[in-house]
Length: 113
Image 1 (cartoon, rainbow, N blue to C red):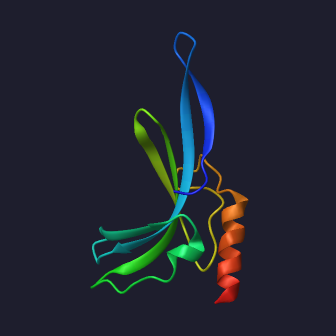
Image 2: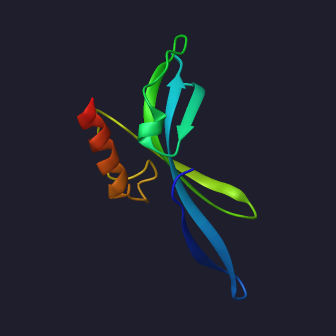
């Protein structure tokens, strides 16, 4: 996964839990029912490359935000789907903004195509 951001969160009785936020790019391949059949992940958009052909599936590019900690692993994932070479302003939960560096990365890659 890509660059992580670590932060502490207060848990009862003065204990601090360490959380890590990471991001990754992915291709999701969905069938005609909207079910995800395959996923390809990459730390950078350039490394993700073009979508493959997967039988009867439609590819969708997505930026994934993971939040978790070393003890419990990934506890939450939220998604920002690319439409016409653009990311939305927020992940699907509407709580977390998409960092501008990922929109800039997408703009650079789209400009080369």
